[in-house]
Length: 151
Image (cartoon, rainbow, N blue to C red; front, side):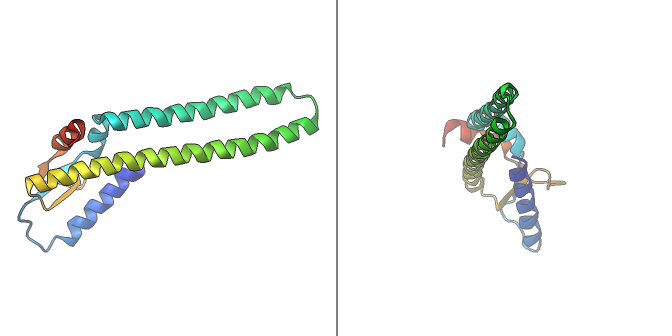
């Protein structure tokens, strides 16, 4: 999620710098992405799913550690380590895929809602609130409403 926030900030900076010579007829909106995520039920559900997968991974490691301690020969321990390493790699890849999928889904939904607000409000651009020093229109609550209503 931090990568998404960074991307939004960089995108906002790029938009601001590229459009500095233009007069913004409709104005600039800004959004508090973190607040939107906190108030977006789908984002909260995605975070719970990713956290549950992380806990599952931690529990896997605890269980494997107990099994390892019960082994009595160096050969059994070596074979166990190799098998566990492969299993762990697969589980970590699965976790990374799930996390990326959920982050992209949430980001895309928030972006789509922000685009709808952009059109409705007649804005020229929407930036991350951390890029705006003075001015602009806060559209955070409108985006949250769009997401909650499913429009």
